[in-house]
Each structure stands twice: as C-alpha cells, then as structure tokens.
Amino acid sequence: MKVLVTGAAGYIGGTFCHKLLSYGHEVLGIDNYTNSDKKVSEFLLNNFNSYSFHKIDIAKEDNSLDEVFKNHKGDIDCVVHFAALKAVGESESKPVQYWENNIISTLNLIKTMKSHDMRKLIFSSSATVYGNNANQPLIESESLSPISCYGSTKIANEYLLNDVAKAGDIDVVMLRYFNPVGAHSECIIYDDPYASPNNLMPRVIRVALGIEKQMYIWGNDYSTKDGTGARDYIHIEDLVEGHIAAIDFVKTFSGSTALNLGTGNSLTVLELIKKFENINGIKIPISFEKRRKGDVAECYADPAKAQKILNWKAKKTLEEMCKSSWKPFKK
Ligand code: NAD
Ligand code: WQD
Image (cartoon, rainbow, N blue to C red; front, top):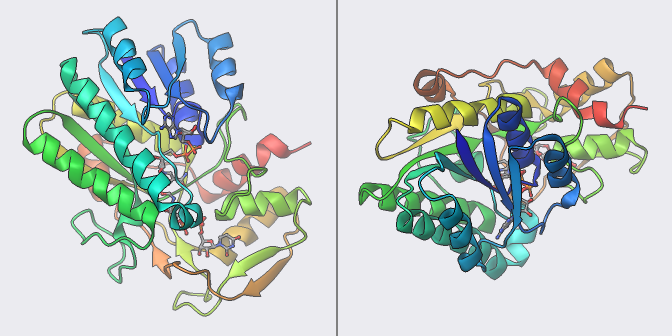
C-alpha cells in the first residue's frame, strides 16, 4: 500500500510513518518543518527505500502538492493528514496564522485529492473539540464547543470534511486523539521537551532532565479524585496503530465518521507524576499553582466506537507510557 502523509516530520506523523514503513508499506512524507526539523525524515530516508520526502508548505504551495499527486497518479491508497499548528496558547495570540494554516492546508489537500480522483482520507482531530463538557466519558455524538482558537480550527475542519463527504467527494475518518504520550520504540521520535512544551509529559521530562527545578501543577481544586486535572493518556504506539486500522476501514467506507482514540481511563496529574517517579526512580518536585486558563477538570474517552468499527484497542499500560516517555533521555 502507498500512503501520503502530511505533517510527516512531526511527533505523531513521524512515528506513524516509521510504523507503516516497518510494516513494509510505501510512504510519501510531506512537511514544511515549521514545527519539526530534518532529523526524522533523514532517519527514515536513510533506513527505508520505500520512503520519499517532500518539503512543501501545503497551505501555500498547492502547485508542489499537485506535482506529488501527479507523479503518483492512481497509486496512492490513502492520505493521512497530520499537518497543523497545535499549540493552544499560541493559537490564542496568533488566530490568523492558525486559521490560515489549519484550514487552507485541508482545503488545498482535498481540492488536490479531488482533482486526482483520490478520495480516502484520515484526519487528525482532537479531544479538544468537546471543550468543557460535563458528560464524561465523552462519546462522539456529544456537542462540540471550542475553548481555544486551535480547537475552533479542528471543529471547522471536521465540518468542512463532513460537508465534502456528504457531497460524495471524499471518504474520511476523523480521529479525535486524547492525550498522546510516550516515545517511539526506537527512541527516534518523541514529543520534544526542549521545544517549550505546554503539555504535561514533556514538562515532566524537563523536570526529570533538570531543565526545570519543579513541576507546576495547574490547579488542585478541581472536582476530581485528588483535585488535579484528569485526562486520558494514550501511548503513541497505540495511537499510530489506530491509524493503520483506520486506513483499513476507510478502504470500504463511504462518507465521514469521527472516532475517539483514547484508552477510556481517566488519570489525574498527580497520579501520572507518581507513576512516572516510581517506574523511573526519579523524584519530580511539585508546586501547586492556580488553574491554567481554558483547562477543563476532566476529559476522557469512551473508545467503544473506535474499538468496534476499527477492531482496535489501546493496549499499553500507564507504566509503559511513563517508561517510554523517559527512555530517549535515559543515560
Ligand atoms: P507536531 O507539531 O509534532 O507535527 C505537526 C507537523 O505538521 C509538524 O512537523 C509541522 O512542521 C507540520 N506542518 C504544520 N503546518 C504545515 C503545513 N502548512 N505544511 C506542511 N507541514 C506542516 O504535532 P503532532 O503532535 O505530531 O500533531 C499531529 C496532529 O495531531 C496535528 O494535527 C495535531 O493538531 C493533532 N493532535 C495532536 C495532539 C497532541 O497532543 N500531540 C492531540 C490531538 C491532536
Ligand atoms: C494535561 C493536564 C493541565 C502541564 C492539550 C490541548 C489539547 C490536545 C492535548 C492537541 C491538565 C496539567 C500540564 C503542566 C500541569 N492537543 N498540567 N502542569 O490540556 O488535556 O490538552 O493537549 O489537540 O488540544 O489543549 O493536555 O498535557 O496540556 O495538560 O499541571 O506543566 O496536565 O493543567 O490538567 P490538555 P496537557
């Protein structure tokens, strides 16, 4: 099978490309390196003959994107669209940049797909589309309500793709990721702790590395079991396997559907830090701070729909997630 992957140099896209290639598939990777560098593509190019890479900004260089499709006319089996800007805080201060990049990318991609009679698409959505929702665990039919500009662009992408699928132009599976953590098994690709992350696990890694002295916990007065925020952490390896199952499914599927990729387990910040400390033998000093603006108390998936439709289930344990997240940095 030949798969075109946008955002191929990023944390999830890179891990996914490596998995597909190691299963013997052919991959055409595209990225503009806005939030990544050459390291992942160079590793994949050096290790797999069935990988090719194109540095293209898909929001701006639609002619180059068209060239790639033209050169592979009729033999791309599926497109997996990871490319997006994803930092919640940054999206609030740069709304035009986020709307432009995250919407025009998808528009260019589906227009190019249509002009080359390619209709099978997997899209990276996010649990952020549910916003602040009291009905937990979350099922796909819950109302969508953005709490950030980034979240708005993900919902807008879902609406766009639903409309295009309704018109009969594409068949799309929109995967709503919960909280991906962990590194790729060979430690080549990970959520970069050096790139000023806001997410919990790369920030725990910064403390473990000594870059930060302590872990600031954003709020301990939520109505969760210990007062800290609760989320559904999913191992990156399980997440990418979900995409492979989605490619298999979309081959014979018509229309659009959204699926939660999560474990169905709700875990607090303190529980995650405790587990990280125990499994890796590293002390993570903490300090309780005020709630972070825009945070929800709890957010976890009901993954039943994805489990049934894709015949997929997240298998990795919390221990494996904590071990794997630290593995690339272990001396
Ligand atoms: P990432 O930033 O590591 O990867 C995204 C990649 O897309 C980057 O390499 C970036 O350079 C590239 N890119 C951005 N705009 C582009 C453009 N116009 N043209 C070409 N390449 C472009 O992020 P990630 O964590 O791997 O996320 C992948 C996808 O999953 C994103 O769509 C993100 O919104 C979504 N998502 C991520 C998370 C998470 O916690 N990591 C959770 C839910 C959803
Ligand atoms: C998890 C918990 C924080 C850092 C974000 C995006 C969402 C999605 C996933 C892409 C919360 C707490 C964190 C820290 C802390 N991304 N925390 N101290 O908030 O679920 O979602 O990433 O789609 O769109 O909003 O994940 O990892 O940022 O936070 O206490 O230094 O950890 O308050 O309770 P979140 P997160």
